[in-house]
Length: 207
Image 1: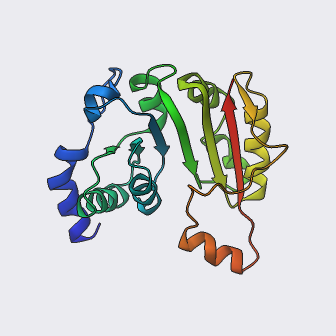
Image 2: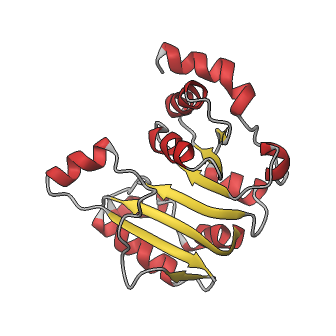
């Protein structure tokens, strides 16, 4: 962690952070308003989360990340940009979703560039497995979206297969979806595209 990230965690987690507890969150109370809530799982260093939140002040954003440097980075961006619609949970996403997110309470779920665990023996560690996708689907409001993006084609095919098998979801596109305007293209993604690497967006709607 950098000194700035450590300082942000120390000073800003009490302001923007949510402690993990097996108690369902009341988003209206948490944000002091009634607004659509977007959950982002694994926000990395937080640049994308902060950018989307700044561009969509009408929505609430709850970000989940386990790594302290990323948490500190998003907290710092949130404070510097004066964002009032961002909250952060530093904990395992599976436990947060199961223990803290009420059914049909989310407008959208973003999972951008999750760890692909490329080695076959590690595939079981991939986040988007049928059981967790089912839990995510149940927490979307009817008509809400689960949006996943990855730069690993093998993982993209796996995600598409798993989401297609979930009865509560339907694909918003015939196959993979075009990148929507609200998902900014990251520096990492731009560099990869210049090198000929692909990026796949998978966007499913709750029935």
